[in-house]
Length: 171
Image (tube, rainbow, N blue to C red):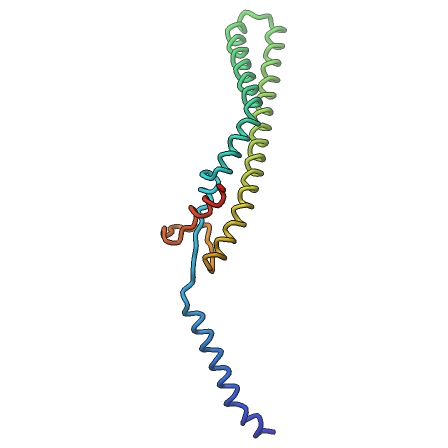
């Protein structure tokens, strides 16, 4: 039995050497890297610009309403400041309470507006990101890239595929 194991060693060593050579050749092959500047996709693509315009139209009435309320609050506050010294105590207290309530309403409305706006922008960005991700995968496969990076401190323009993604995204 020892003779059969010893006799098969050269075959196993040859197979092991062949695997090691194949692995070394695969590791020595240059890696193909691509880079995508995703922020450009979110700001420069036609989809992003259309989404911004859609959101602007969707939120413009609310923004105008909030601005009108802020203007009304400021004029009421200025009028109260000038009238306060001559107002009876009861009237001064009532108007101060009205101003305080209006100020709270303005702050709440502004906060809700900002939250809704951020939510809508996130939804639109997620939609664009999903489409962009599919395109990145397609282009990576077409160009036989091993990896596509999205974040880097510096990137050579030679590996930047952002323009290709933008062109495909804009179709």
